[in-house]
Image (cartoon, rainbow, N blue to C red; front, side, top):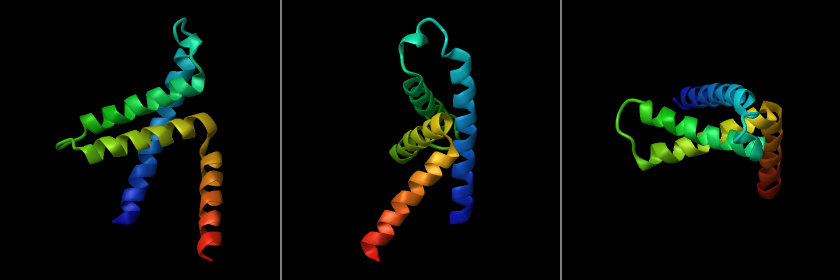
Length: 103
């Protein structure tokens, strides 16, 4: 069950990252959006798209789903902006630091 949840979460983040990258590239040169940093635009899009996914999903919407949507949106914006390699490197550093602390 945990493996399925991880696969679904990574798939959702990947699809969101693709959507964010495409929308950002298409809209970043619009007059009103030229004034804000592209990273901030990607972050806002990630949160909005992720919350839209939560609201369009089946069943009731609770605080846990909204919180998960916000976190998913931030991760998707990070992946869309910096790539999977940077996220993987950050995760490895955090895991290595945790091992040093407990090891």
